[in-house]
Image (cartoon, rainbow, N blue to C red; front, side, top):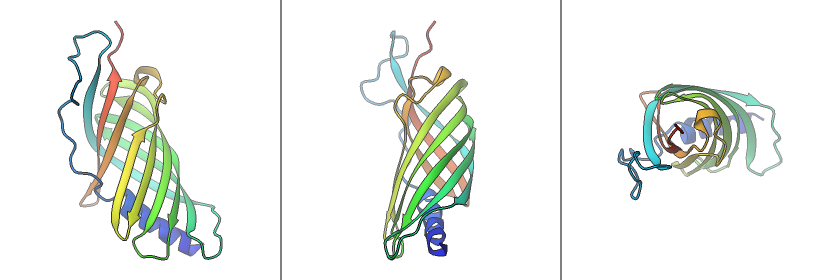
Length: 176
């Protein structure tokens, strides 16, 4: 079991906490119309910081296959997204140093630029001999309340031990 959690630490420490993508452009996506047009969905960009707590959970380990472990996730987001989240992560480490993968789902509750509700983020990350790749996307149709219709992607960057997020998303304009 120790091998599983050492692998998870590598995954959580290296895959989850490394700068994944370059900075996202602040401009709306091509083809997005102005907010004055009725029924238009506009691309937004939000930024901020977050704290994360990972707790090892029970998991199975089978022979010489990749070690698979499970972690609970708890986050506090600050900035344009003022929210908390909870979720679950499954991670696999291999015998090759720097190669691992994880998937996770986290339920986010709070406000996004003043609009309240909930949504679910889906993570899929891999590390190939130290080279990370991460996708964090909003689960389609998971938005509730004023976040109904939310769609988007989040990037994560770690600078001097501090976690930053950048969230590019679309959200229908509120009905009048």
